[in-house]
Length: 180
Image 1 (cartoon, rainbow, N blue to C red):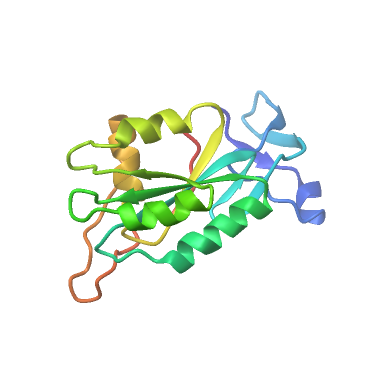
Image 2 (cartoon, rainbow, N blue to C red):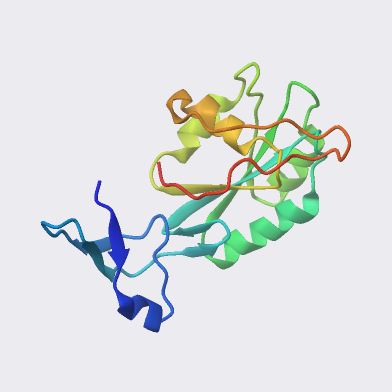
């Protein structure tokens, strides 16, 4: 692992290195390592920021908070526009089934999974889907993105939060983009 700073030329060209970039670095004895070149990107997402993403896992809960088809649809369009395969994952299957929503998105040709991080049901299928390239996870606050990542790989120890009973939605707990 090398900590690097981007060369000033990137700022001039309005290019920001993001997670997933393939780069050429210069490692120096004094530790002042630099990113010399960012290779051509196959895809680029602005939010979450990521490059060379093959699949966008659009995570939505079946309840608490209620699923937002608007968010799922928007993220699907963003994925398709950037030549990224959208995959919809419904969480909290143990609290409420997602059959109706799954059938709608499957009819549109989108892969769907339903998981319960409490029972572990469906987690292995999502884990298998991740293999073979860079994947990103996106969705509303409180839908279970970090909980799902913890279920896929317990060594990640992602911080999770509770759903606000007053507001009926999650509180932001994850604020950074990392490549695992």
